[in-house]
Length: 243
Length: 243
DNA sequence: TTATGAGAATTCATATAGGAATTGTGTTCA
DNA sequence: TGAACACAATTCCTATATGAATTCTCATAA
Figure 1 (cartoon, rainbow over the protein chains, first blue to last red):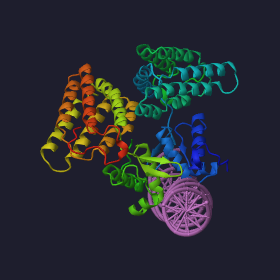
Figure 2 (figure 1 turned 180 degrees about the horizontal axis):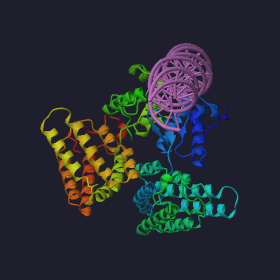
Figure 3 (figure 1 turned 135 degrees about the vertical axis):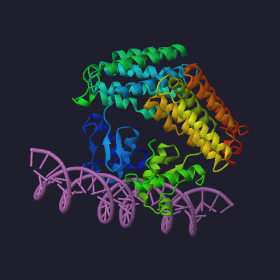
Figure 4 (figure 1 turned 180 degrees about the vertical axis):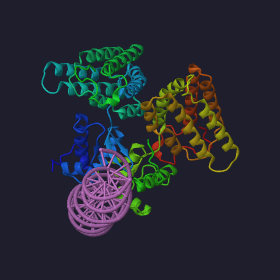
């Protein structure tokens, strides 16, 4: 049995947090094929826990849209995002995030410019030193950068709705390959500038541009696949995607 | 939220759907006081099922923001919305719903004018005949009306994010008293007109006005309570709130 | 060769039980 | 009188077992 030293505070639901982290990582890494069924008994035995916490984790993963439940058939991993789903996701982001950037670009303590700058220098350093998984670092930076702005907007409902989309999680799952994030970081810097200068209009527009560009970069990976997705031929190309 | 078929329908998770409906109703009706702890054993015995489905239901209700989990302390019902939370919720709606109304006001088959009109005549009839619970009918109408527009917008991500807020569910919980919904229905009719005429600008503005007005009506209930909410003196007034 | 049907095996959903932590209560001491 | 400690009771979290439904396999017949 793995160490019970769970990241969950106060040891409540120790098994659950371990199992959750393990299963989430398995799905994101693609160790469980997209669309494949998940055998509760097999998972519980392989992780050395009973079925009860595994079932609870599956329900949580259902909330993350990483698994789906079919009545009478149990749980399966969700298929990867197709182009319409990606478009819907980014349209949602285009609705929420420019609004958040505008709300954050105020001359108040809530202004997140300092935190954003710290985040940017951290990722710049991390990119220079080629240690570790550059791709994972970049996704983590991207996640924190956007989350920080959402948090600064000061609306818990919007923040929660955004978090629930798990957009970075799903895009990570789409493209488990190497990334060159220079463009992303440059756009982030532009957004930070506008927020630091307390220019709501510019912040809103910079964020909107960033999201439009980001979608275009992701959508490029679908080029040529047109409506052939049912071919199930291995999916979109997987190298040198730029977030 | 994909409400599990509460009827047998595939028999999968029969106990869970019953327990879910029962507990949700209990919380909404206030039979369980807001902020009170929930005893899993007591619930399971009173409903005649084991603890397993009760635990699953509680996790689901946590997703609905109707209960919260404290590590080591189990589940409690969430406190009622206070004024800042209500404001956050309506700011989210003000961000999403006018956008949805604009998106729905197109000359396409997706235009929901017919469904909206059917919904409006149904509630008008229901209001005339004083049979049944007028308040519950009105909330149900309001829910369906807004859901229909969100659906017509054609973005599953936005629709899901909106559904996850369970805004009608929480406002229902806030004001379990009688309602006079004439104003609400009139505003709905205005929104429908703009959508039926395929006037995106007018639809967007009509929806925005409706949400601003609706918030003002709800916020009125907090008048006088200022920052005295810790008094825990029974909450806001509960009669003649107009959605 | 293909389709069908019965039986076996797997898998899910729920029930029940036990260990561990927390909460409440009563007593004792300052 | 108030506070602190210890013990008991409650409550949660996980494990294991069982019944029911589905899926898989294989043999048989058209």
